Image 1 (cartoon, rainbow, N blue to C red):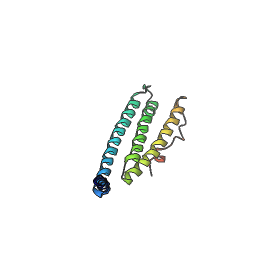
Image 2: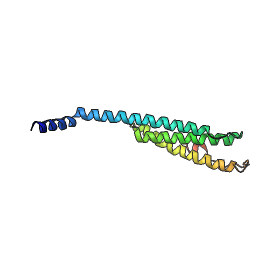
Image 3: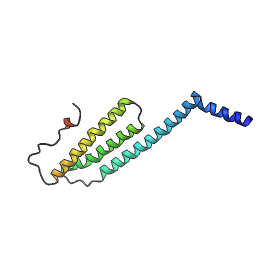
Image 4: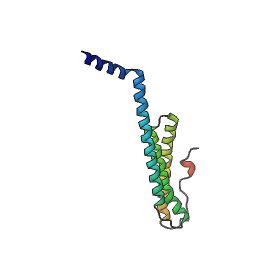
Amino acid sequence: MRRSLVCVAAVWVSLTPAASQNSRHEHSLQSDREFSRSMSAAMATMHSRMAEPQQTEDPDRDFLTLMIPHHEGAVEMARLVLIYGRDPLVRQLAAEIIASQQAEIDAMRARLKVLGQGPDPLPGGFPAVSGTRGK
């Protein structure tokens, strides 16, 4: 009988608001630590990938080649905010970053293909920055 009362008391205590808040707080701290670890890993990967390409002394191609992993890193960091972030406006900004950076990545890859075939005497049609970055 005494043992069942102890069990009932333990369940009751675990359901009280204070215990529930502690549990949420501990979960939040763990989640924040996971975010920090994941963010550090994403930044390390981005920096490593930016250092990989051998520069060609062609400023246009080198710029694009280095910016692609930079933008991919931004997409990954924004993705992590969508997973772990709590502020709705920060989450909205992260979603917008993903969309705009992905559009820019696609544009940079397309331009690299064109530049890989030699100088482009008629560069029209390359996506304008205003097309991916707001109004």
